[in-house]
Image (cartoon, rainbow, N blue to C red):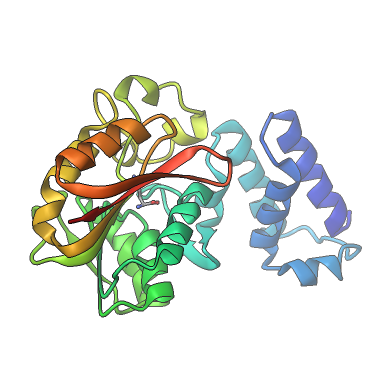
Length: 278
Ligand code: GLN
């Protein structure tokens, strides 16, 4: 069997198992196991595939994807975000396309950004992308979880060594003030966590998903304390769930933020709230 037939075979298995984007995922798994770029694959689709380690690994990953519902990104160990390749493990949330909308809005908004703080940094995808795109003087990412920080640091070393990563429970370990504070905190109400798709609820870190009782716990905490860590005229940016805009906007206004705006993602859903400290 040639390469193309193996990819088609994988796609069929994934499709039968009800996995979204079976063609794309089969290709990603195959190219990962055989270390092929898109071009190399396209020019060698008819090359016969020999029995061996690579093929065994491909079959094993297909099986784990299907029987254990492990997300593709944890199987291949990476996720692209804003054009950069991030290493991911089950210790960090997989960077989402929705979050790219937040990054784009921040870059387009042209807010003061000499110093940036990313709270609940996870893989570090927000801090690292903003650092590479906005070139601040200071860029810090914090997380409560040491295992997540290890991955963030590894991504930072490879992509943007000037980003500092620090263990902190929200602002507890943060000193000083910043021009821009951003956070994509856990925001799913506890009771909804068990309804998530198996890829998410069984494999992504619950610590990164569970926003407690009403899903708003972390926004409440962060909005209340952020003013102490923002320079005058500084900006607070939250990624939010599609139905949390009004509640988070009110919280920010009550905490003293002005011109608080709810903005949408590419799907047209409310995805972020941005406000300025007067
Ligand atoms: N900031 C990280 C991300 O956007 C992690 C978010 C989280 O763990 N809730 O991917």
